[in-house]
Length: 397
Image (cartoon, rainbow, N blue to C red; front, top):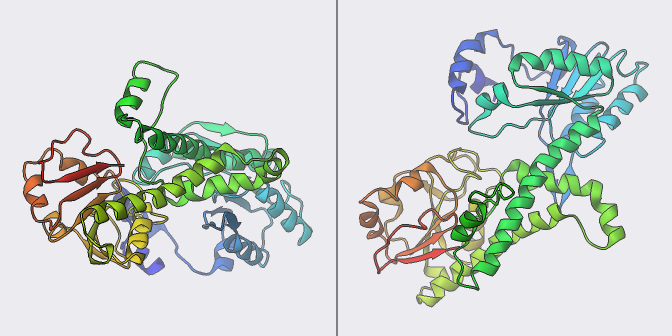
C-alpha cells in the first residue's frame, strides 16, 4: 500500500484526490514502522478500521495498535482518534495509558475523539465544509485538537467529553438506518395493497416540512451503516433486556438485512414462474458497490445477492462500471452491450449514474433484446416511469 501511494497509484477513486497526491506526495514521509512514526511525531491521527461479527464489535486491530503505542514514547503527544468506536473506548484507552506509564492524561499526554463524518465520493469537499465534532479528555486535549483541525474548514463543535463525540458518530448512522428501515418496511404493506410506494412517499413529503421520508431500496450496505447501529446497540443492550425489546435502530438494521432474503426469494420465484430453473439461470447483478458512483464494495448488498443466488445454483455475472475488481469472485463486465448477452434476469441494486442514463437512451431496448429471457428487477425504482415493451417482465421491489 505504501509503495502504491509513493508511486501515486491509488486503489480507490475520489474526486480531486489525484491533484492532492500530486501536490503533496513529496512532502509526505511514509513508513510502516509504527514506533518510528509515533516517536518522531507530535500529533498522531488514528483511523484504523474496526469491524463487527454476529452483531458484536471486533476491536482487535485497535487494541493491538494500543499495545504497540505503549512501546513508544507518548509524553507530550496528541492522539486524535477518528475510528468509529463503541461508547467509552477513549476513556478505556486513557486509563490504559495512565496505568502503563507514570504519565497523567491532559497533562503529560493528550487524547481526543473527532469522528469522521464524510461520505465516499465527496470526501475532500466535505472535509472542507462539514462541522467537526471534538471531544477531548480534558480542556488542553480539546484545544490542541481544535487548533489542528480548524484549518480544514467547517464549524468546530466542542462537546464536553470523548464519549459524547463517540455517541454522536454512532447516532449519525443509526439515525439514517432507522429512516431506511422504516421505508423498507413500508414496502411490505404497499406491495400487498396496490400502492406505488414512490408515489405515496412523494405525496407524503411534498410541501410538508415535517416529512422527509426516504425512498426504500433493495438493501442498505456499506462499512458504517452496517456496523454503527450494532455498536450503538451494545450500549443499549441492557436496557433492551430490561424492557423486553431492543432499540428502534437495531430492528431497522435487521429489517434492512432481511430485505436481502426477501428479494432473493422474489427473484427465485420469478424465475420459477417463467419455467427457468435457478440452476440454469443466467443472472446479471447490475451494481456491487454499496452506494452509487463509488468503487467501494465493502459490505455491499449487491455482493450478498450475488452470493445468495450463486448458492442456489445461478450463474452470476456483474455489470458495474465503477466497482474495484479486487477480491471479487464473479466476472465483472464494464460494457453494457456485453453484459446483457444471454442473461435471463438483470437486477439493478444501486443508482449509478450510468444506470440512470439508461432511462433516456433509445438503445436500452436494443440492449435488452440481447437477453435470453427479459426480466428486469429494479431495486431502486430507477425505471419507475420507464415504458418497457410488453415482452419485458419488469418488477419493482
